[in-house]
Amino acid sequence: MERHQTIRAYSAGGVVFRLVPQDLRQNKGITDQEHYTGAPVEVALVGRSHPGIWALPKGTPRSGETFEQVALREVQEETGLAVRLIAYVGSISYFFIRDKVRFQKQVRHYLFEAIGGDTALHDSEYDRVEWFSFSEAARRLTYQNEANILYQAEEILERWLQDQQKVGKN
Image (cartoon, rainbow, N blue to C red; front, side):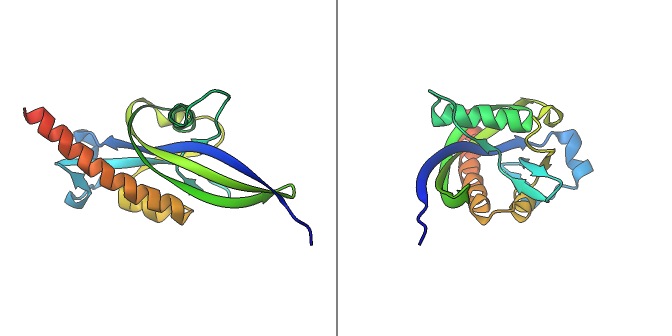
């Protein structure tokens, strides 16, 4: 029986959200169910038209980078958006085999707020970057473990937005 060498690999990425501007709310038909503390929220997914994949942005570390730095860089490159780190969300692990080598991959995910940039400026790794409500993004994600990260990010975001609202009222 042939045994595969197992290599541990790491990457990082995240869930990018934006508060939908007032002028876009009616155009998108956003319902009250999509509102958090009075503001509708959308998340950015990266995709490939062929073979029809939707994913959270993520990538591989460069020498000397922390997980947070990897996530920030990869999210910005793959989405074209300027973002700021809000919180750690969680990690997922999975296995795959490439060239008879078995990889155990761990991906650490962070929550990011889009603060600028444009999805049209994304790199060539994916051919699509689009905004979706949390519920639509969860339906579109190709991998269930990423949908689970999205649900965790949604809970963290709700708490964070509530805290921001309290701070704003003081």
